[in-house]
Image (cartoon, rainbow, N blue to C red):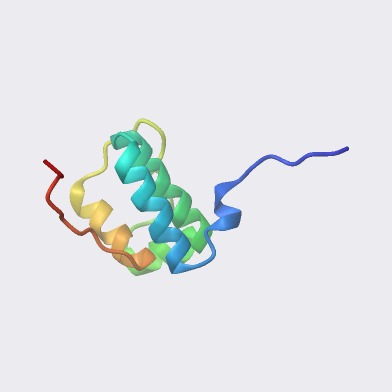
Length: 94
């Protein structure tokens, strides 16, 4: 039996799935996990399209969303807007 490597980008095919994925990572992950997840979504949609919509170059996007990177908040906001999601602030349960 032949198996294939799991690639999350194969499953990020709707805005609902993208939002669920990012929300799950935001709840359970750390900063680097969130940046990696945004990168997965950007790859699923297409880095060329995201680059065009953000005004950033593809190499800059790959660098900003790579493992261990620390992108500026403005870059993250541009990418989130380009992938069709937004951040929402909610109070923590007490």
